[in-house]
Picture 1 (tube, rainbow, N blue to C red):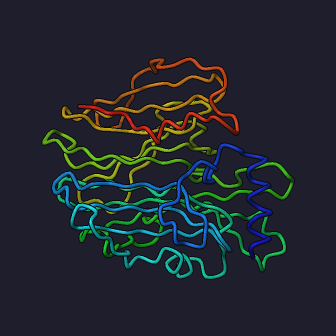
Picture 2: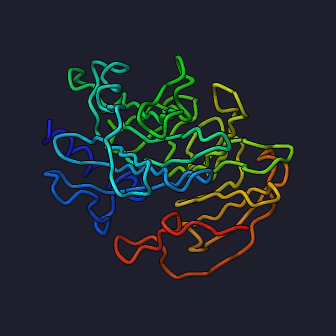
Length: 303
């Protein structure tokens, strides 16, 4: 399976090079691990700074994830009971990971921890597997600081869901669901305003139904599923990040990969509508294979 996975990664990188996979400059989280690691994300509970969680992608025979949590400010860490690889086998027993990444966390006002990640799945027993690659963007939540996580039922466990066809050597989205969802970022409204405790998730989307661009979805307090996507910006984008300020305004920044610009938009109505884009930076080549500007590694600071 290692050969299969590596071959598909090479093909995917060639066709859609900005998507999915850990960059070469990602730093190892656990130096004793035998597999390479990357795309790490750490979050601190804003209600209790002693509580932290960190997650990262592992690449070896297949793409996997590790999550560790701490309740003493990082002096010691314990591995989460969530086994993402085992959960994946429960949900898709005949499929194997062909790619994945982008694990991200966010705490809400009640200390609930949200986690999201992405898998590209292939069925190795299907001789036409390249025409039926599953793109699944998962989320789960924890009420015990990452010791355990729960999934919602059915399709509610996904914030994105699509099917890809690479059989012709060109990437094709073959269904009308949310399609390609990549490089997501999460934030929660910690204010007491109209959208208090609303969870936001932003991502690059390529979809027959909704087009291509920056999409934002919302999870209202006590809801069990993310609402329908809002196309916040239409165009070729990557590396979006989002933050909510003390007034409940949602701020987004991202790269337009065709114009080589870093852009900013905001929403004051809970992610229902967004402002016209503001230019932050005009670049020359923001998305080469080296010297990338990865702006979701440097999230906006808002107050």
